[in-house]
Length: 314
Image (tube, rainbow, N blue to C red):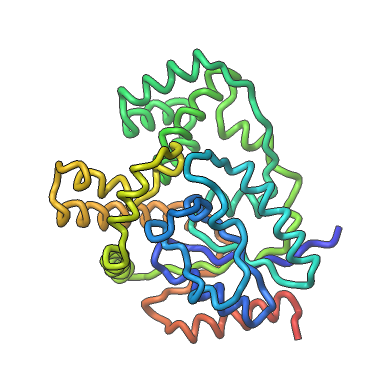
């Protein structure tokens, strides 16, 4: 089997993934496949740091800005669409570049995980949902840790209640943990020859300051009004998990001042970046670059050389 070449540019929020991906795409006739679980939604532009047309520089972007916020989305659906995009891009002689900070999406695509739907018992799901809502995320993670420590560690990154519910549901309905189910469903091997490029900062405060500046710029660009419009429409559970809206809701409802809400947004984004790094650091195949120690041009040059060498490009 001929393996398809694919590049992944990954890392925490505000690390510069979009800019590097676009420059690499310009050098290698690349097209970008977004691996961001929130940039898939239409109208959610500022909160998700969706690249503007100017930032895209004419490079085609796939799996971005195509789903209504009231619709739900899954990693299985992402893999289906992403694999189709990789085949299409490669078939036209171009290089697929997967870019984003949703580690589960990247791992599922490049690891060739196969997904099977297990039957849903609506009564059981309702019961589990009520229990999770009563206990909260932290206590629910403690419970999951008693029977599936690996999943508890993985789920602590996104802290998505819906995925916590699903993890418990799988265990109670099948007697198999989510970890065991994932192992059972794992593919026989990836169909891709992947180069994984990671962006991070050795000094965590350097990255945190970039995050703070990004939030300030988002507010200047109209994040508050975008959040207001978002809450005026019916949105699905997945879209509502987006960082950037729920932190501003207390201001929109008159409960907290705007300054406090913006500070909470910065803190939530910093915590999210920390969880992203916890996820990605487990993958020893990622080639890391520290954005606080190398200039953008130096990172671009090294990444270009690595791709040229490993994919035997002229």
